Amino acid sequence: MGFVRIRELSLFTGAGGGVLASMLLGHQIIGAVEINEHCQRVIAQRQRDGILEEFPIFTDIGLFNNSGCAELYRGVTDVITAGFPCQPFAVAGKGIGADDERNRWPETLECIRLVRPWGVLLENSANLLNHEYFGHILRGLAEIGYSAVWDVFSACMFGAPQTRERLFILAYPDGCHVSSWLGIQRQHNWPRTLPADNHRALLADWMETVSRNAGSGNGVADNVERLKAVGNGQVPIVVRNVFEALSAL
Image (cartoon, rainbow, N blue to C red):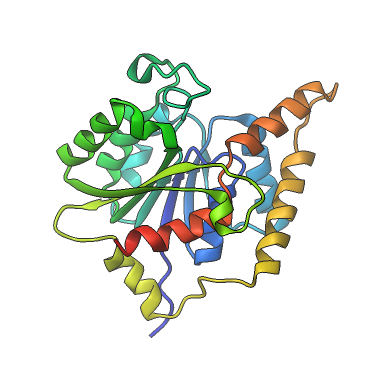
């Protein structure tokens, strides 16, 4: 029996830290949604470099949903990953939740409803657990027929030289469990781990691409975009381990 690859639709992809985690898991990325132009260029450059497979890069998630593109992914998507904007809930943000114009949870939930994947991995600020909006998120998932498990993970838990605590939520259709489709991956022995040196090399290579694909003339905007991309990005080794840790709950 041949390999079966998990097909993933990535929302709020950023510069691709989460996509790198998916590579470590052996997932096949079949689409990405990212509005930031700098991050789009980083992803596109990685495709031209041959590091990433070819997949479409969409811009605004609202347009992705309303144009009918999201529905095209129904029936062919195993998992959606989404690090939806954390500013409405983060300690460093305004903390006003639903009233923050940057809140994209409604569009994220609508995309999940339209696509109906077997699994959803959501990432946000750890402070979301202390915000009343967390209950709203769980209710929204329940209303479209998804159960969820969650926990807070720190980058230093997996050897990274930083804290970077993040809340991860793993959602799956009522009556089943995300381990049912992760089990397909395990059954066919798809490679899910790489030596530590490979992790470090891949991450360093990826961040070098983040740094050199800015495309601005004066250098000031370049640095801002680079810092924003890295600051908002997910640590690949954390996401890889989160998939396995939460699927075991």
